[in-house]
Image (cartoon, rainbow, N blue to C red; front, side, top):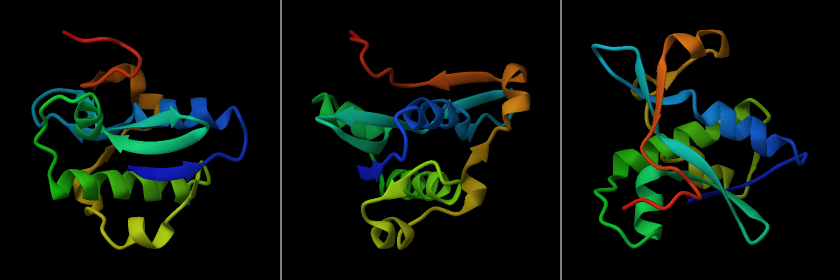
Length: 126
């Protein structure tokens, strides 16, 4: 998990919405699979890959080094866009996936795509 700090209370919602538009896209359809979520625990905030959330729930996951690199790249983008500050800028910056592995969907195109989250925070799954 990558710990982040928010400048203002409403930044949580901005980050959460932004993350719905960043992920891995389908090659054949206009589907975007969300890679990361913002997690709020005990007054702290973290950017986490959805596979890390499965592990936190005690479920099986095939979290890879590349998943962590994508999480770091997405976290660094949020930092570059002044949406968060980072607890460990050097750690995040030193191990990032290339931009070619991430699709960033502009807000104006959001309605044209199916946005798919493979994990839903706060929802129990069977």
